[in-house]
Image 1 (cartoon, rainbow, N blue to C red):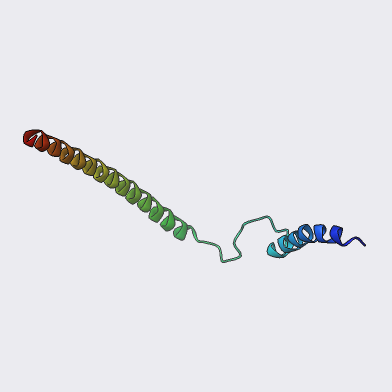
Image 2 (tube, rainbow, N blue to C red):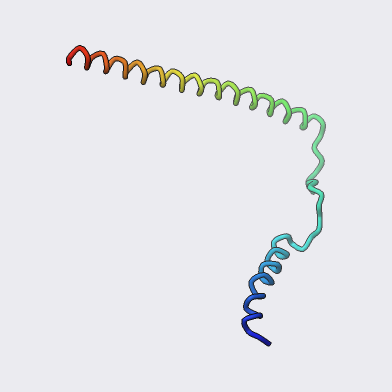
Length: 90
């Protein structure tokens, strides 16, 4: 057998072997948890908690945007002040 052909085929064959091993050889396509079912009360509690976290995220995002605007205004005022001082001294 030609050794160069064997070497050329070794990489793709090993890749297929590793991919098969990583998937565990299972063809399971459903993503349902094997854990115990979640009660309706737990589901509602988690949905409320998620809604609270989304609201908190929106508030923090608005706060960050406000701080960015304030800091850019401070930089602009400082630059204006420096330019007016340099004109007065110049």
